[in-house]
Length: 166
Image (cartoon, rainbow, N blue to C red):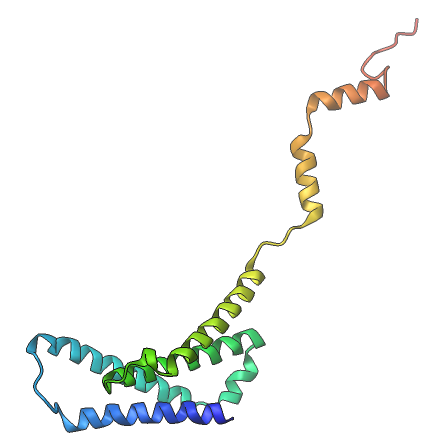
């Protein structure tokens, strides 16, 4: 429970900093070459904010009941990774090197679990061997018509020969 509170706190701090920066306007001059990039970043950030607000406003328990355990794990990992990635970006905007921060270990931990879930998903998708179908396939692939004729003539020597009765 403490982790969830901490994650929501991180998100709130990040969103408040974004609003503060947007409301205050540019605190210092910046090169005009990056204005388009900044506008794109701002629109992307607004889009992310809308998605986060939508996710937070919907009852998680309702959505989780509809999902199987593997999908729940994927959703939780995706949410944690997205939130921690935003915090990483927040640290960068504050001039803190995130590689020296504990957020790096947290992202690595989440990535490890994401890889484990991917392995499980891949195992589920892997082709299963139907032994009966495989043995029929091999038997039919190795079947030879000449072998069949020899086997039939050995078992029934008079087959195919007409006997005349006079």
